[in-house]
Length: 294
Image (cartoon, rainbow, N blue to C red; front, top):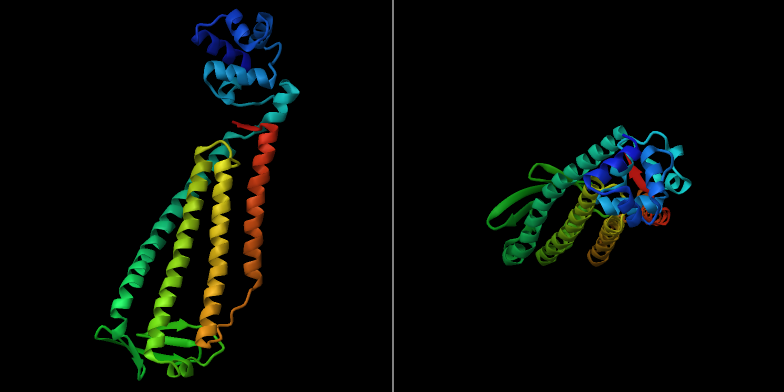
């Protein structure tokens, strides 16, 4: 159906005459009549007024599939963004897939995060049982073998690479067990904070794509705030990771080869770009009063 037929149906379903509708909109009865027969189209302000009267959205009033945009007045044309059903379905499907996957990943990461929080609370009470000597790690009457080969520490059969320019074997021999107890607690706390920031970032992405799936446009005030938070969490996580590693390397006299690489700069630039895309996208949309129609 075209606009005129939709308008006529809405008016009749509301049991309203052309005269009454014209009075509510603030136009003549002849204008309403011309709209219904397709001889003319209302201005955007009048379309908005009609939507308010019939309690519907603009898409329902105009039609289900806009084909001839040129038939509308210039103000209406400037406010219309054609969005084909295939494109909308694809975007909605992608948004749903992303927010579902993000929620699953967030839950998976949240589980070890809770475990690390518990370890941070428990370790001070069992740290007095922790010892490192003779290529063995002892804690709560349990012994774990370890071997060092360059930058690789093999703990109980599993290799762990340590990015450092310091001789790891000499580093372990030059520090006592008290130092390592404090170090473990420090590392646990840092890893827990970084893991929490990761969960918060994923939660922001989950909310963002769920909002995009449920809404008509991604450029809303709420989504803009969510993007700001997500980028902030990622940035804080990157900076905190460098700072905590730097502090430990200074205190422990351990060269951890802390560098700011091109990948870090790219991530920061992408984050800032996304923030400005959402900021200016929302401003442009608000300024033009743009809508998306099927």
